Amino acid sequence: MEGAVIAVAVLAAATVFGLVRRRRDGVLRARREDGVTEVLGPGELGADLGERATLLQFSSAFCAPCRATRRVLGDVAGMVEGVAHIELDAESHLDLVRRLNIVRTPTVLVLDAAGRVVQRASGAPRKADVIAVLGTALP
Image 1: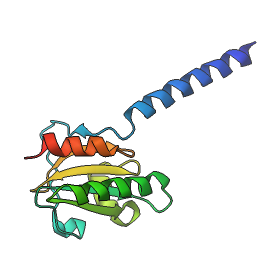
Image 2: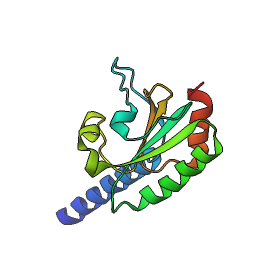
Image 3: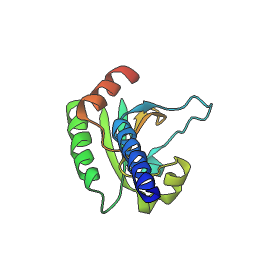
Image 4: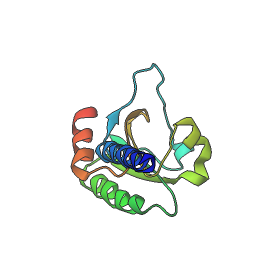
């Protein structure tokens, strides 16, 4: 009887975790207002920033959602004038990964024209959400 109770408790906890993660996965959130503003430049990223915004994607070699995210962000950068898409391999840029607290791939950061992080998403964001963020969060 005790084993069945433990099994049910573990299943319930795993279900709750899965539902919370699914709800939060890929959702773009504003950066925390803790007074720390991360600014990234072309020297750190290895590419020029977009005139209006930059979609910065951290990926890894064996990440299946990273490929879908690459397509989505590439499509958005092609549709919206002045927006660039930069993809970085997380393993090759560990200093940035640590500094920006990247804990999973894909992670997408939306940078304004000056390179300040204004939004971020862990997981694969939807195209409509990325376009909406570019329309509301940036000039």
